[in-house]
Figure 1 (spheres, helix red, strand yellow):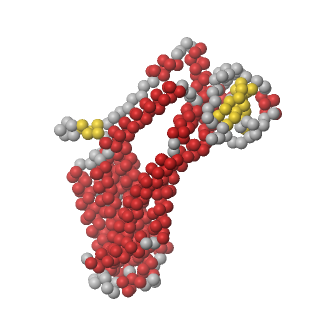
Figure 2: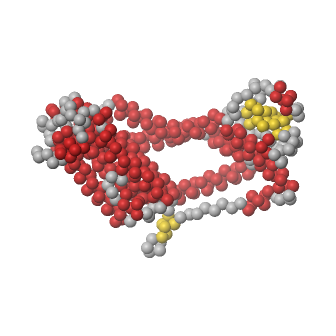
Figure 3: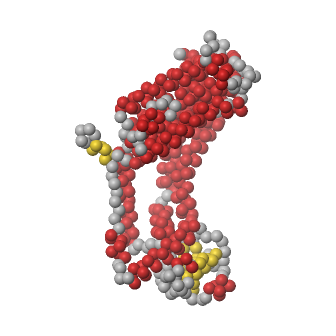
Length: 445
């Protein structure tokens, strides 16, 4: 056991001291935080660009109806369309909006002339503005009050509650489903990322003949287990640092660069895109209601998430799945002489993981299906599938069976990988086939 711990220490320290590990550990959170912050900054940048649109309205129905916003300014012009096109100055105006006289009966005849391709948001905003004004005109013509229609619109929100056998209520949240799915995706990514590192490490030591020196003092099985556990600890270290640094960077960036003015610009941007204007007092009330409702929904969703169970399950299935597949990756690395020879052996490993994602999609639609149950028990698919099932409520017995089967599967695959590893680690220059691997399983020591 002491030899395995020494190998674990060697693998862990040699990898965390590499420049590539340090760079990726620092660069990863920056990239992830940038993904969260980029949309806000891009939206703020777009608001700084003011579009000046020259309007030729032959219908005379939109005079004073096209209201300016922070991103678009409408300038009404009484000239004809041919004259406006002939005198169009791209330095003064972004585009010419032509509204024909028969706009009420033929809405598809509105034209937008431009020198540079307009953004999709600009076109959508104009369409919604014209559409709303035309609807108001038609409602007034038929004597229908739009306020009555707005009052009729009703939003229904269905809050789910789980009933226990004792008749007590438990909160339920869709956020838990999202968290579970993200956990499954992370397990899938880390299994491949760090499993591939195990395989490359074995191939490097085998091709450089360093392994011949190492196994003179340790058994091949001890070397394989030490390498797998050491790289697993590297993965956990990097994962924890990514979470901590991403949250820290996002919080600091939010406090430093996102102020009230930027948030106000975002609200104005959304309103202009919808073609609506709200009075100042009504806008403040709307913002207060939205923030209050949004905060209460978020808090209730967070309360409904069983974070201790999800985090504990994630750690267990991440480690169990990695150890199971890491042993197989190590066996593949020992059986080949280079990465180009690994393709024929990688397919049986990748198929169960890909299949687990296909099953995960069906679980979201039908969490109680027999397919979801069995794939959450099978060790090769349970790390991903069980993480998706847990938010829907998994019986304790199912969870225990899944964990036990994963442990048994890890022991079994480790035994198989160890048999292949002890023979293949010292074999050079021979193309290994599936039948040859089968013979290695029954070689006597």
